[in-house]
Amino acid sequence: MRHIVKAVLALLCIAIIGGSAAQAEEYRLGPGDVVSISVWGLEDAEAPKLSNTADGYLVTPDGNISLPLAGELKAAGLTTHQLTERVTQALQEYMNNPKVTVNLVKLRTTRIYVLGEVNHPGMYELEKTHNVLDAIGAANGYTMYAAKKTVFIVRNGRSEKPIKIDLVKLLAKGDMSQNYTLAEGDVVYLTSNNKIDFSKDILPFLSGAYYISHFGDN
View 1 (cartoon, helix red, strand yellow):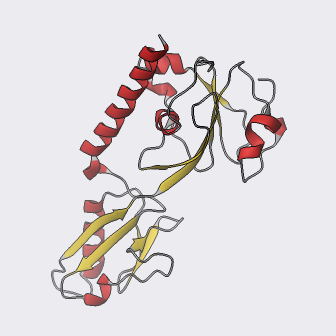
View 2 (view 1 turned 45 degrees about the vertical axis):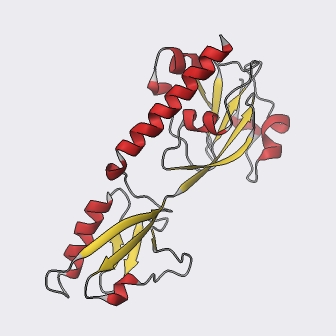
């Protein structure tokens, strides 16, 4: 049974990755992504202007990029095609019929922790997609001792109690509502006894601080 469940997990991960690749053109930019932008006839716009990346234009934490002439432009939430249109529109004030090319050169990463009953617990950097299945797959799956009906998600820096999800519903029934999207610093914790020992099982792995009171009665 264990092998069957692990096979299902692997297949789901492959399906998600494959679906993401097929929808690459619909990828929405966000903070941490790096794009290259070239404008025919405007060589200055081809050179990166940000000191913290040599690859291109970094989408800043506020979701903007800074370009010569065009200035600050909102990039977060846009596809590369939409950003091309936005840059083109901004440059039309200075150029006649600018020819703009935008390419995604570096995906943002989300650092998360996968701890407890997984084969390789630790911190992982996930690119592009970052949900519960991605996290467990990065940790090479769960162990035979994992309590799959009670998996915890601990939100980094949040005051609410951990989110409880049922991995069996996700794997056996395809309930994708259990496949939560993860954010920077989140923890996915698979227990063996449906409880979290904060000081022993989580705190030693983290660089930030959580408060034990956040966990309540688990």
